[in-house]
Length: 352
Image 1 (tube, rainbow, N blue to C red):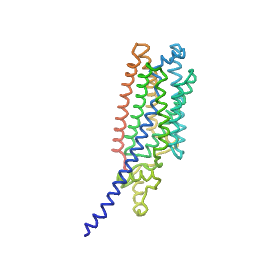
Image 2: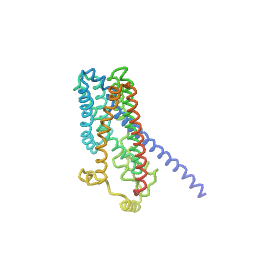
Image 3: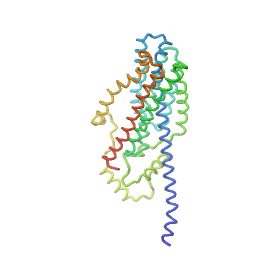
Image 4: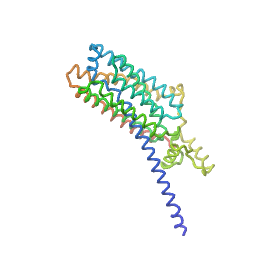
């Protein structure tokens, strides 16, 4: 009788746990899918002009030197010199925003308007202004998307998921450039901006309605002491629904013991002030590696396709394929780096 009673009680409980776990995984998968699509689309307009610099220069009556200085240099400055401070300002805004999803939708809106503005530009300076608007979207999208990933996944998954997010960004940039190389010679250099801009406006409306906003800090600094993966999934689901992620009948003594154990085994909360961040050696390592690395990458992505076309006679489509192969290698490095970094982190970090 005891075994029968236990089985009759456990079966509905197990079914409820499984339904909750499946639902939480479904919410998590939906959020990740929307973030991957958003990141790919935001990055897709970064190099839309690069394969067709010569055609654009011809329409605006620019000399070869002016083409390099204005289309290759000033427009790149409009993207990156605007995008870099935009990343800092929008990242700070994301820290205090009640709904980061609204901020992400706004960035998609700005990116879409920048693309459509580029397709309608009647002069170089109008094109410059449109590309600067695109730079705000490109730069601001990075901190917002990574902030959302940080609240969806615990540390034991964040590096891996960030690698996938980087892969989506690279794939978006590669796809946009490939689209420009295929459409530009047939329909003109303006043509690739139209579908990308339209998709951004459509996704901006969709993201605001359909992408769930994760609760800040819901994933914490790691998995709670003694918590299973299913319990962490329940905590994520509670966060999407506005719950407190806890149980009303939790034993106080057990909670205190878990908190004390977590405090002894987990790293401290990451610093948020600039001064604190700059005292971390790893931050300096990332800056010293990343800042110089952006210089050759920026030159290659801006000039290589047109250089191969104008100086070596390759058709625009073939020159774009060369750059596409270059981007594909970068995608592989992003994915491998994310997975390898996650394994190293999991092997060396305590679980909270």
